[in-house]
Image (cartoon, rainbow, N blue to C red; front, side):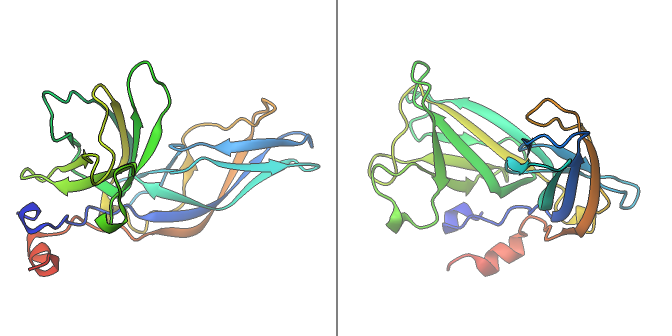
Length: 231
């Protein structure tokens, strides 16, 4: 079991493809067009299966005196974005550990947002700890580990290493659930929904493939963990 070794195994990794997306409108008005996080595309088939690809960050382009918004070299990743929300009750969860229910998570895509309590709507984005030497008692950070069932868990600081959660905090965790290596080489994408620009004008979309999906990998095996983990 990797946790007892102080080692977090590598998760599945989502492959990334690149496209150039051109959104055409029927006028030359100045405006902006945004492809939002989660905007989806469907690939051509690999062994009889098409794969879902998504944009991981809101991406906005502007235009003036032209009828085209051009999203050049737009990165898209295979998988589905899943969001889970947890309420923190210190009495029943003193170690502030939250189990992520999905097995095929790409942990590099995890985003953690904390709302201190129901009456305080200010949220903070927390970063994953990579080196505890860079963490103090006010750092907005989370830790990642794998449990005995093979699920990933996040947990939070104790006001010594990392900021402690407020009792009653709400934690929102989103991440990509991916097929990993199986969706490498996916290409020739079509959008799943339409796009409208800031003027409310409908667009017609043209998608040109730049690079096929690559970089997808499977979760680390037990043998690999034994090799990689510190002795």
